[in-house]
Length: 332
Image (cartoon, rainbow, N blue to C red; front, side, top):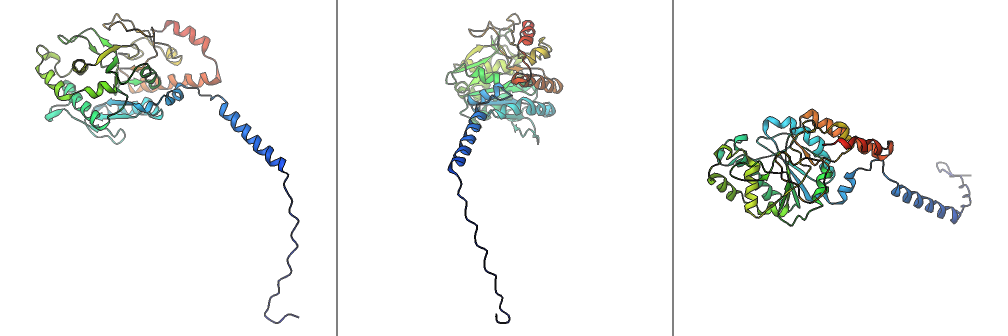
């Protein structure tokens, strides 16, 4: 009989005999998981967009230099959340420059030198300071793409264009205009942007370019507002070669007759050379649009939706091949 105050635990239940797993079941389970992972990895994605291919090309070596103004921040925000978001997703950073701060864009505020007015009339002086800041703060990129707040960029097409050239050569690729700003001669038109190699960007000297712009005779009517002409000629003086290519569209899709159906089908753009543009050098006769100009907030958002809805269709929901072959026959 137990003593008072002492608790006696009942004897433990005998442990059930441990069952041994059959080794064959475990091996079969591992093999099944391995086969499933291989099959999943090899299955094609429904969104077979060219953005995935673009990422594999290392688009982090492309820097977009996007220019806006305090009064245009609303439009710039639309650009940033459409094509800008897609470029960043592919690894290509977008740096905004403005004349005033903005909580969304977080731009670098760079004004014209010596307190000069930073409006369009002094755009050349402002852009000289912008390029000076770009090469001080962001050196070493393979390619620099300067765009405006009313441009829409098809990033994967820009990346594909860059892959055709050597970034160590001093080249600027764009729409070379022969309707020259007298007496400067042909220049890389700025409206549709351009693709500037890292070597070309590194050669730029803002001080020498400003001295050239201020002293050049006979250009008072466009001395400080024709930014593209002056900076293009400054680059030429530094040994940079201008290369004319299609795809840098000096106009919106509507102005150029590029319809929503053609945008959905990603039709090549066959820009003519009769509008004051140099004949394009050897290369594809027609290229996908790279940069479009004179976009509004509405047309930018609409084009972004239409252009990338094609990627969904191409991923398997429906085959646009026969339809787009017909639509693209009439592309400009």
